Structures are given as structure tokens and as C-alpha cells.
Image (cartoon, rainbow, N blue to C red; front, side, top):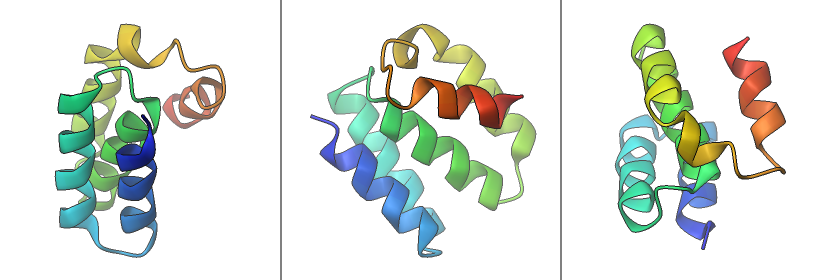
Length: 80
């Protein structure tokens, strides 16, 4: 399920950054291929002012999130 990843993204978009990061990490523990959670985690880390750390996470988890056709192009766009 991608529910927790989508939930984490919504938390980040409503400025609940710490909770978004926590929920995104929880979602990734449950499903490492949850591209929504990876996306939410990268956003939360970026919002916290740690852009290079967010980029590192995208690099480290690349093989996990590239299987999600729906959001992969969007994450690629962020990464560019």
C-alpha cells in the first residue's frame, strides 16, 4: 500500500515537517518500494534545509522507487 507515503506527503505539504519525515520513514519500513514515501521523505528533508541529504536518499533508494511509473517522472524532475 502507498497510503502512508501519500499521508506523509500531505503532512509535509501542510508544514508538519517532522511528522512527515517520521511517517515517510515508517512507510518505507513497511514497503521500501513506496515511491510516495520516498518523495515525501525527500521533501521533508529539503524543507528542513538539508537538500544534499535528500538527494543522497534519492540516490541510495533509486532502485526502490523507479518501479513506480506514476510518480517516478515527478521524482526525476525534482532530482534534476
